[in-house]
Length: 136
Image (cartoon, rainbow, N blue to C red; front, side, top):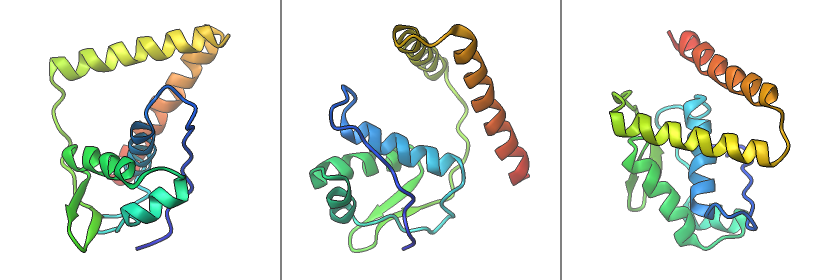
């Protein structure tokens, strides 16, 4: 088990802590921060580090396991596994578009200009393309 990069959650957020944890770890997984075989911290250790109940971390780990990022085994913990890229279904695309619209609405409500939102989205997309090209 290596050192986990710092992840932060906002306990005052309307987004549940388990989703924040899963989202932060998913971002690290997508970025390739963890190699196949990397062992994530035990549930109780990460829960203590983040100041949440251990079931909150366990729920986040289960989400990532269901998405095919991790294998969960007793006494072996959460281990990163090779993940095949799934083919997006129309439902996945629709849910993604809905989430983007929600984020856009949040950005507008927070006072961010549309060009800032668009530039940020382009930068994120460019990052994914660059990561994919770097992996070959």
